[in-house]
Amino acid sequence: MVDVDLGVCLGGLRLHNPIMTAAGTAGYGVEFANALDLSRLGAHVVKSLAIFAHPGNPAPRLAPLPVGMLNSVGLPGPGIERWLNEYYPQLISSGATFAVSIWGRTIEDYAEATRTLTQGAPQAAFIELNVSCPNTEAGDRLFAHDPIAVSEIVSRCRQETDRALYVKLSPNTDRVSAVAKAAIEAGADGLVAINTVFGQWLYEGKSVLGTARGGGLSGSQIHAIALRIVSDLRSQFPSIPIIGVGGISTVDGIVRMLTAGANAVQIGTASFVDPRRSQLLVQELALRVSTQGFNSLSSFLAGFGAVVRSGEDSELA
Ligand SMILES: Cc1cc2nc3c(=O)[nH]c(=O)nc-3n(C[C@H](O)[C@H](O)[C@H](O)COP(=O)(O)O)c2cc1C
Image 1 (cartoon, rainbow, N blue to C red):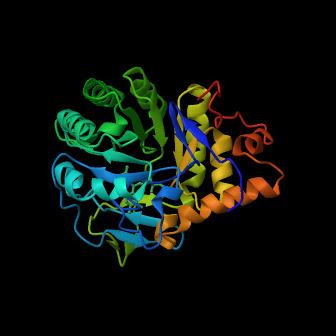
Image 2: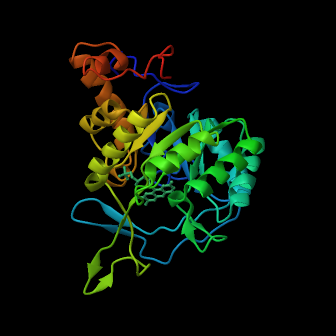
Image 3: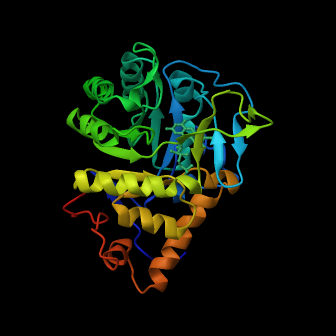
């Protein structure tokens, strides 16, 4: 391993590199332990959990496209209590830094999930609020497209925890900035951008997925969308921690996202092609920094004229 300091800061949280798994793409615990050493990553993000167990959507749930992937997994999961008993101990033993993504159907679902995790999982580094879910109390409108609903979720969760709260933004609205502003004003510590983009793919006139309406598009086609949203968010919110996600599978993609303004990145669909991808990217990023003549990611990024968000004392940390 090349001796390079890849450390970054997410608010008060120091990660030993900027590379995380994206929620829903690397399991609940150490399912990929044969291929992936989670302790080598900046952080592992546990697939979105609800306070209740949920079966998810009918199969087929994944459709590889000529480029990228469409999914309608539908947030299956064991529920937080079972996760605490069965998966949380595995993650503690793995030595990984990890965060937990949560979802719900009502604002109180989010609050209860936050309370239960705060009490039961003291080692979870932060809680990621996946708000791309239908609000059953508001005609199934997605929380993520409604600044008021997101503000209410964050405020309620803020009452339940002093853990860092990150809000994961949907790209499927023209109100991304308004939703982000509402989240920050309600007490969110940071933003994650972006979740999947609405998409559809047909075979002989029918959806290739079990859900007739289509699903969420991910992978390289959404990379430019994610970069645009992260750049816009960084211009609007100069000091808020931002995690960039969408179509990253290479070191160039990581560098693009960090220079667009992200403090750290998440790898999703690329892990379906190769479950080791995120771990390999840690090595490849260290090699890139070193072969360019730098001994730290922060000095390497400064060479691009990028604002440095990797130092402990960064004004933006
Ligand atoms: C199969 C699959 C399952 C996903 N599950 C979740 C999830 O549970 N929670 C969530 O917030 N995002 C989920 N996502 C979205 C990813 O975390 C990520 O935001 C998105 O795929 C874009 O990144 P990528 O292009 O690197 O995959 C899922 C994505 C995929 C492909």
